[in-house]
Image (cartoon, rainbow, N blue to C red; front, side):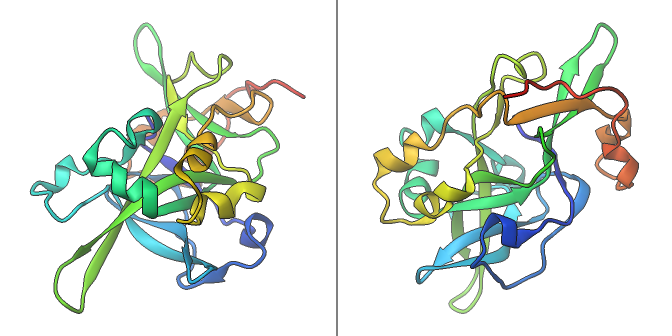
Length: 224
């Protein structure tokens, strides 16, 4: 699963040239769930960057700690909690990497999964709205995960689905047929993603130093 994100300052125009920024991008070298997170949504045909709570909180959820921060792609239409959001409320999370932990004999070694070229990523997500009053509401999201490639499987069995920029609007548009949206949720090409080991300081989400993401070994990747 994706329990921690790396979000560096990103060239948002590279991701979506026509993006409207309603709130500055949330950046963090070590972002944990149950925090505010930047996401892209389509509003009246225009892509907007805003901030949502990372942890899907439908109106009937009673315990905040039960808010899922990830949703398996295979269960989006099977689970009522995810079905409506997948059909009508899809979004994208701009990020520079996802942390994963590889089991070792005596500890888990953290890795940062990034694009092999260190470019920005668009991660698939779904969102929902909880009205706290007639005039106020809270929006929240969960990342959508898929199986990892054989290259990265030793690190983790699942990662957020990566949506290519040329498919971003298809994912965001609620008019996109479910079969078409579902077809975008695939394991990333092996040459797209790589991973390198980082300091175990990242294990504690209170650590927000840039050094959390500094490589401590070579990148594991497969060139095209």
